[in-house]
Image (cartoon, rainbow, N blue to C red; front, side, top):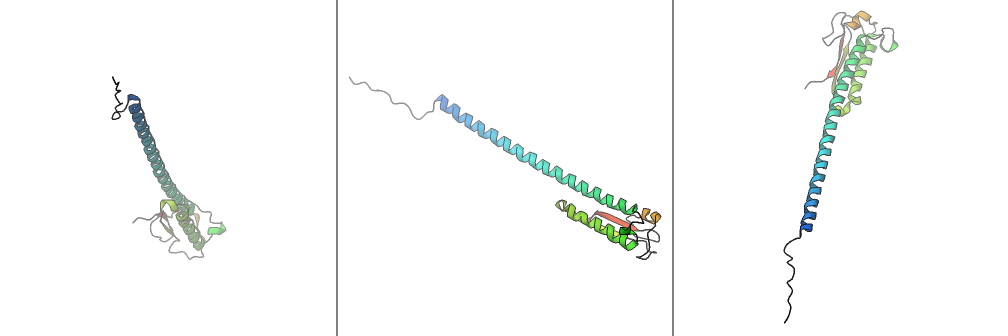
Length: 149
């Protein structure tokens, strides 16, 4: 009598093989979750940084205006209306370079009073009146702000 052995059924997987497959799939899913979380965190950081830079650009523009309104009239950099206009216009326009990553585009308008010549010396009281309205008699114009489109 011949003894026949039944060949192992290779169509099915053993419990250990299934366990290894499930563990591998779970590991891939966990890796995918970590990668997605890192991308979301990086994007949030970039957006937060861009917002902070835009705010810093606006604060810097306000600082230029404040300094133009409180400039020392005896300082040689701005002891005439023409020098005052050129100095603070350049300061404001430099913000476009400093904050170029925010796509800052500024209006830089610094003009002396309409009743004063370019070589006239500014007066402290006149500088203090500077605002974003058009210049007038005894009142200069000081504008340094983000352009509106």
